[in-house]
Amino acid sequence: MTRPPHDILAAAGAWPLEQARALVKRLEKSGKASALFETGYGPSGLPHIGTFGEVARTSMVRHAFHDLTDGKIPTKLLVFSDDMDGMRKIPENVPDRAALEPYLQKPLTAVPNPFGGDYKSFGHHNNAMLRRFLDTFGFDYEFASATDYYKSGRFDAVLLRAAEKYDAIMQVMLPTLGAERQATYSPFLPISPTSGRVLYVPMKEVNAKAGTITFADDDGRDVTLPVTGGHVKLQWKPDFGMRWAALDVDFEMFGKDHQSNAPIYDRICEILGGKAPQHYVYELFLDEKGEKISKSKGNGLTIDEWLTYASPESLALYMYQRPREAKKLHFDVIPRAVDEYLQFLESYPRSDWKNRLGNPVWHIHAGDPPAPETIGAAGDNAPRAQITFGMLLNLVAVANTHDVDVLWGFIRRYAPGVSPDTHPRLAKLIGYAARYFEDFVRPEKQYRLADEVEAEALRALDAALASLENRDPPATAEEIQEKIYDVGRAVPRYQDLKAKGATPERPGVSLDWFNAIYQVLLGEPRGPRFGSFVALYGVANTRALIAKALSGALKREHEAFLASRLPKSA
Image 1 (cartoon, rainbow, N blue to C red):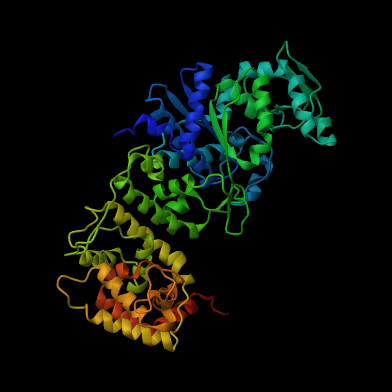
Image 2: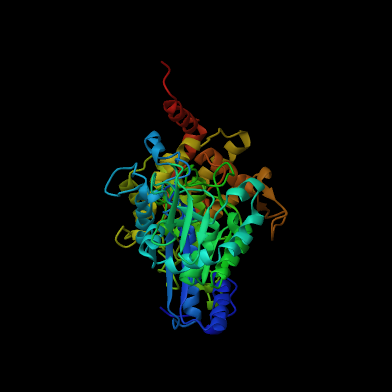
């Protein structure tokens, strides 16, 4: 792996590099000889993609920092799970929700695992689900459990300091609370010796010298507990600051919902003797309704759902792009993310270092992107190209099959010698496309009949393709595309005199011509570059598709498929 020149690294505008440069300056001022990156996870529900995104984005900043410092400053990424939090409500997406009701307000690592298996608690199960994916993706991280850190004494020194600085912490917290909450608030949350619940109760005494708190337990009796050894935890806002101080965290990013609290976290960290870390605030993800995704609701996508239909790299690209803009996180974003990743990967080797550092794949692959997989048709002297996810979705549709072997047959005819062994990324892409088409694309297709002008244009396209059908070597994608343009130019409806370079003798072609092709032949409002698609699907097959569309058979067959999905009346 070749590293980029340092002067280009120092000036590149990609957001991970901007954050890394600020972190370099922070360490230069402090004189600290290592950097700790941290991400947080609340295991109140199964991990969602937003959790993964936080780790992926932080890893991108960490890699940028590593290259900026020539690897001379050691770094560590700590993934911290707040699994000692009380279960305040039962998630909607767990089995037998009623069985968990007796465990409300108990630490998540004390709540039975509703999913079965070997994990001893709900918190342990959810932690394992997070680690499983992080390990699959190959993240370099250390996992930390709040339960383990509190109980093992890792936080004891700072918790004793919190007892000493109790009044100062209260002065930070009380102005942020309403009058009723102020009357009962305490930064310390004792774990009840009687019920095992995390208690939100006022303190009757905080003895800094003894390092203890006194409060009324669930049974009404006054109880005194040490603040050390896992007998208490901190409220979530003080907990943020305490953790930063205890671990000496240098960098942490969090969602916009934390932004207003960041000054509170910082101040408490400083009260407890720490230096607040560098922050990066990202926008929240939304579901298909525009609502914030939530672990407890289970809306939005899960990690496993994305990976059913697309690669981890496409997910990492989605996380990299525009982190400070709210983005919808639903199934319909997957195809574009896949194809954009392929486009970025293909352009990377042809770019200079300045553009490489602005290319997401440099950040996704920690500076060492894999070579793109390209194919070329037999006898094709044009630049080699990639088969896109969108193209495969349409191939699955018109081939009327999700049989992977049949789909490979089309590809081998287009590019002899291509196989799963020579193109393993393409092999996975075919499987993803077949599953995605069957679950999401096919039910939403809307074929329509051609009007008179469209029908005449499609018959002209059929005739133009007939002139290419028996070519040896086969017609290239560019030659086919030019025939499609020529047909459109001859139809007044599709002529575009405003197109660049257009003349009355040779007008441009409007998008209406291609929209008609997509809607009538593919049942889609948009589609791939049609010349490339025809080259892959085959000229003869495309002519048969045109005939089927003009006869109305395509529309009838799809209507029959939709009818078969309707529930049968009793």
